[in-house]
Image 1: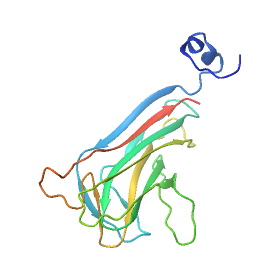
Image 2 (image 1 turned 45 degrees about the vertical axis):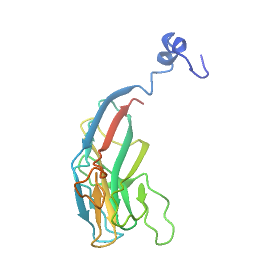
Image 3 (image 1 turned 135 degrees about the horizontal axis):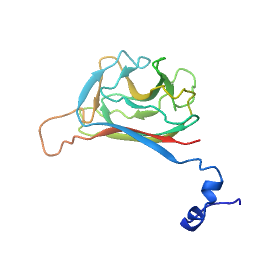
Image 4 (image 1 turned 90 degrees about the vertical axis):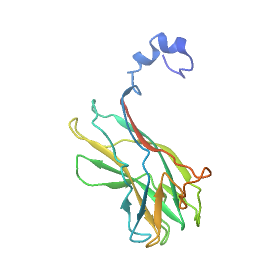
Length: 182
């Protein structure tokens, strides 16, 4: 059989199973953080770990893809950016899912406008299908790193102005990893 499987009858009839069963979710791992932080970076071209943002998964099947759902609540008084970074078995983090390089512009997964003395947070989110090359014992890690003007903080899960008032917010940020069968 071929064609689009658009209803539960087709699924229950075995069309999906006879097609090899690809796309099945094998496991889900999530890291979420509710704490706040204010961190500075060394400048626009220097990326710093965003506190507590690492999420890990160890694939259970060969050839799986990892569906990444990420969101971060952040604020800064100057323009900056967040990169989604991935590591396979401790070999070192590399940027994944970022914009195209053009001149001296930074390439990021997420960016934010400046927000001087702001209580505002910018919620940036995305979904990415990552198809890494790994062995079954490898731990796959995904985290976020941020870049900002020197001496300018990136505030996570809070605004730049974080006074104790009922018009200020505290948010949550997450990275969720879904292992999807080949």
